[in-house]
Image (cartoon, rainbow, N blue to C red; front, side):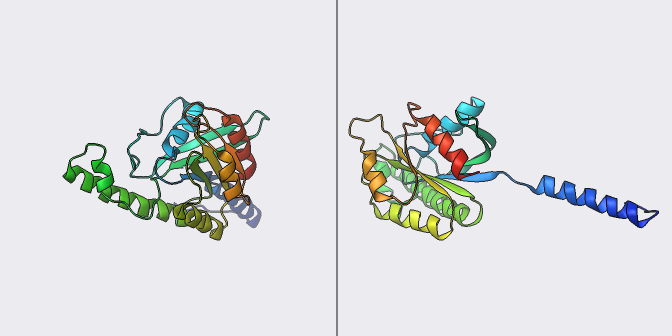
Length: 219
């Protein structure tokens, strides 16, 4: 299509409008990745956030490691805090990151060997995909840790280091505080350089504090 301009002022006005629309429609929402080791409660948390906003779930959660084997995304999730702050984000639920996936761990959950080997392969591919997203497509990270477990595992130190090297804003979540042996203070001691929010993604405890921190950190 060709547009004929009768004078330079009309053309200049057209170009200004075109530039305005380009800026308007190129503006993207923050893409927040939910990362952490297997069984830290990432999908449970992602489901909690999405359900609070839309009433829907993002994906199935399971006690079996690596239930999430592909990154799942929910676009246009508006986070609201009690203070009135709002944040529009895309939530990305990622596979549990680990340094080694052995099919034998799936056999402990009653899987046949062929199924366990296939699941291990899919989980390995999922971890590679999660790392690709972290390098290319993520604007901020919610890093989820099970507060009943030792936070000083190698994978956690490695992942937080990678996030820091990319200069991504990060919130560390001390999850599962509803459990009797939870010790979120260990997580705060392990990563004092980052904000830590104690929650139960399963029970919904302290989610308002997490939403307020997300609105502050990812704005």
